[in-house]
Length: 102
Image (cartoon, rainbow, N blue to C red; front, side):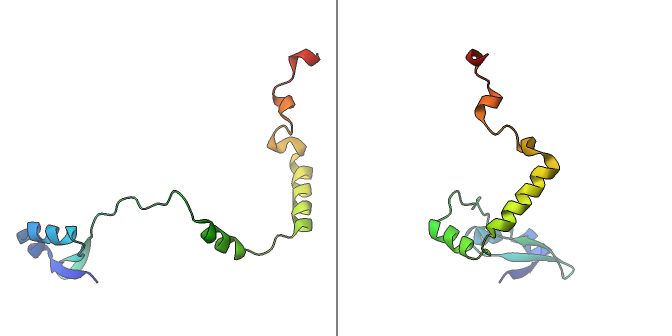
């Protein structure tokens, strides 16, 4: 829970309050009794670059099962609407034809 302090207290005791923030304390600064700012310790970027396999497995287990027939029908409808080449060439030789085959 953040300690509530007045703007004047922050102004008068800035160095001491900042040392406390650096040690992990949190403050809510008020002006005329109205909260206007939160002073919190700086958080470095905490994004993960990897996710443990067990966590991924648990997330995937929570998904509904895939209805393969429904998936195939949806894909067929998309092909009918957009054509088979909507996602690009299906084979690499269509992108880079073999010059010796001509």
